[in-house]
Image 1 (spheres, rainbow over the protein chains, first blue to last red):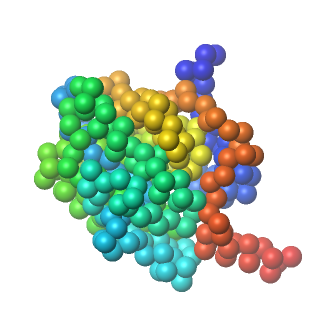
Image 2 (cartoon, one colour; image 1 turned 180 degrees about the horizontal axis):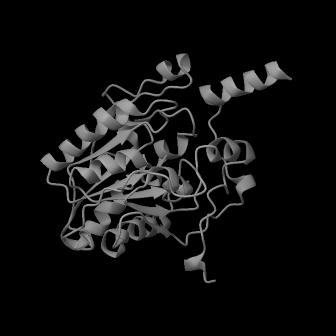
Length: 173
Length: 109
């Protein structure tokens, strides 16, 4: 098998304890509701792209994600969302997420939210445009993701639609 | 994250979800998944590694043009430059849920 066909090992960096915990929620066979589908109708080179990170990013000066809430309620996480300006740099952003070392993204935003790399693709003509706004949520929701899914996600979609975003790339923590 | 992708897709914006834990696809059903074997905290590449960051971004975005059906999972070919044992991604102190689980485990022992 060539490298390009190799299957990604999801547990390469998790350690066995985390693998055991996370595996509990994964069925052997697909078991989910029908998958929503919106075809991408325009070429990438004509499309406006917005990024949505789950790394708990907020603009400095904005209200940060609430880590104290999670410290008090370990099985819950902040379910709100933040708008990030697409010209933001690491120095203008803070990251709040209790499950990773946030030092990397604070040194170089592009490790998790590749705003500069996206701008370069726009300059090269490979992507039509970067949206005026990118977005962040805080990915850890513990036992209840209902507010994130039923309130924050529709609000983010609405914000993207108001900026005529064509494509949304969701980026993990 | 995958549930959020579904909501956005359902409201008319195509999504690609970059994901290390791609088997979650079986539980969630994301429209398009780009699976990546990078550590948590640095999914696009290491600090200052513009080339990898740009390549991962291009590969993820290419799914918008290549994926033809809901639930497509593409395994990206990137190999992290450090051995897992040398790769630091954990927070300085355990997350509250892990601390709670450790406490419960110690109480049982």
